[in-house]
Image (cartoon, rainbow, N blue to C red):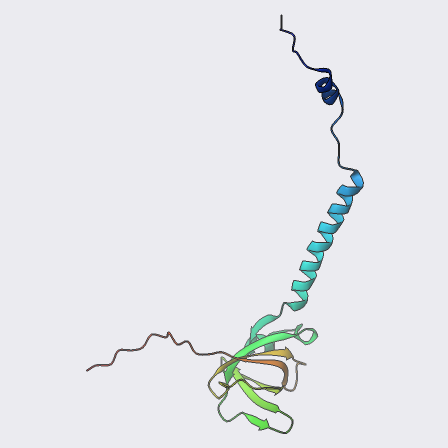
Length: 151
């Protein structure tokens, strides 16, 4: 035999009442909001994602005409031509002995000069120069190891 439990009537009423449930429409609304947030994050990252290519990869790319791309290369010696009136700069970049002519209109970084590695972002039609909207010059590292000199 089990002993009888002494439970008050109020406690018995609380135990007899079913637990309150979250309405199904709230659950659906929460799932819809979460789905919309995931979609917006995905769509935003895809629209701002730009591929990073070398000059040979760009020449072999078949679908680069339809999208904006980033290309890295070294500015070639004697290839920089500036037009200060229109702020237009034309130059060539190279990587693995393949060159790419580039046109850029805008402010040029201070460290832009022949021999500097640059990243250009823009559109390539497959023929003619690469039309850059952005020009980034990579700074050489200040922490490169130096060869010790003999004294």
